[in-house]
Image (tube, rainbow, N blue to C red; front, side):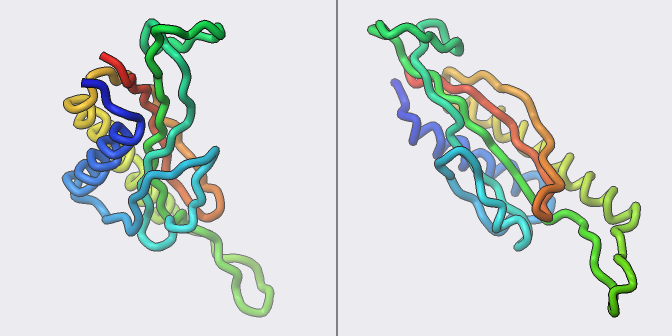
Length: 164
């Protein structure tokens, strides 16, 4: 039975929540489906955020390839989603009286990187879990993100089809 883009987004997010919980790492304070060309990282500071976001959709006759002709009769849709996890990054702090900055030490940077790698593994586990419920699913690649805006983490893309 064909699933809608919304249903597949719900499956991906539920799988991500379970995978993060099963990983046993630090909990995130926000899990949501986002729409738009980016995700605001406002929740990364509260312990982390996890999301699913639609990146693109196109007609497909030979999943996961998208066709570009105007005669798309008989085509199904291929949706590319982004699964992501971001957390607070170690930041430099200003010292009193303008006497410079206190930079994060090697241990803080290494700990943040280790947590991001754990989250990467949870993203992969979520994709594998979702593949049990979404028949047409092709994983993409993981991309590290940050540190940007005080956040550090990454995203993993996945293309899913709405027609079997």
